[in-house]
Length: 217
Image (cartoon, rainbow, N blue to C red; front, side, top):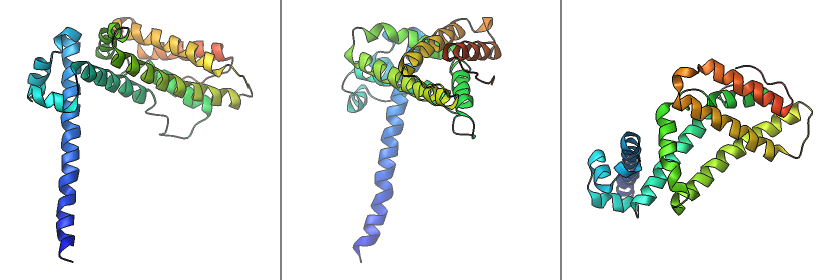
């Protein structure tokens, strides 16, 4: 019996430590993204990241084996956040599969996904993909996560419409290319497009590609 209070007191400390470490790791990733957004990948030096995050350079090495690993983690955080933002409304309401697909597509070409900062961060990181194995692995994983989610939505919408096809993977790749193109232009030249216009274009073109009717969102 005397030991129980001791265990109870120690449990919050362990939880607090985990939360503190996660927060510091997130702060390092945020600092890295801020620096890349301001001056490109070359601006995100270990020294600059440490100064921006308010930590020592040694602490960075506690969480990441190299600057390349930290840069890759920052890219992963960015791309995962964009994918989740595209899917944020999927579970908020019951809908048809066609409606769920339309919402996903519309959100993928709307703020905050199309924020110029997000597109510039992506562009700044892409030249590292071909030469850095960490970045290549992250790029592949985040691309596949988005594509596979899109494929599931497409497959469900086609089945709902009575269209059973074995090329849902190819359709998802083509649809992803459409969304990527609109996303890049929206982020690079935001003054040329309205969110409503981009959503309408994405849904209309995808409807024709899939040969089903998707609702306007």
